[in-house]
Image (cartoon, rainbow, N blue to C red):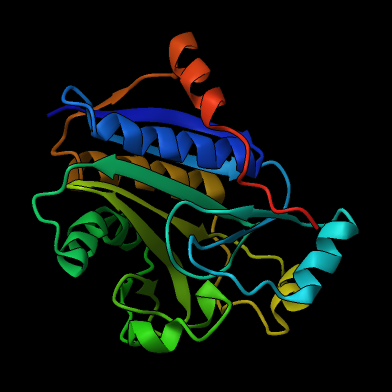
Length: 241
């Protein structure tokens, strides 16, 4: 089946999460085609996982100062700082509903892209239960995450399932801001060499075509009818400071 590539767009967290929820909803329709997109956030934003209830008072203070937006993701996982990164979202009906197997299959294009960039990655080894004790997604690398040889996490991913349909999205670190990262998490950002965003984006699109979509990836903008559906899903993602 042909995969649909939705061209990159920059928007606030409320809209981006609405698009991701819409992508998953489309998979639940009989004629829904698998979709993939990369996107940027219009302001530094901290996204919290679907079940993450503990909100650090520092995050609320930064939000009150207008320096950080807080938003709830539809997927699981821990807090992710969206700044100096690219976010990907894919929605499809995987060949399996086994979570770890689906992660492995859905991350092959990411591994291939960074191999071409000269930055080989591997799956993390931290147990999910241990990672869940930490508020920061990038503080540890589980079997759903991709790390570099020095142990630093480059890509963190999370899932939301609706029956046999999957929404998987994740954060691809390009050059995370050290100052803001320290303020948000009271720790240094992962020890990663910065990468050129355009080169990363191009490598990801090529790798997606060859290693995720079977060579069949068609670019298609969101149309007016689809935007109307997405707008109906907006609201409720932002968390008030």
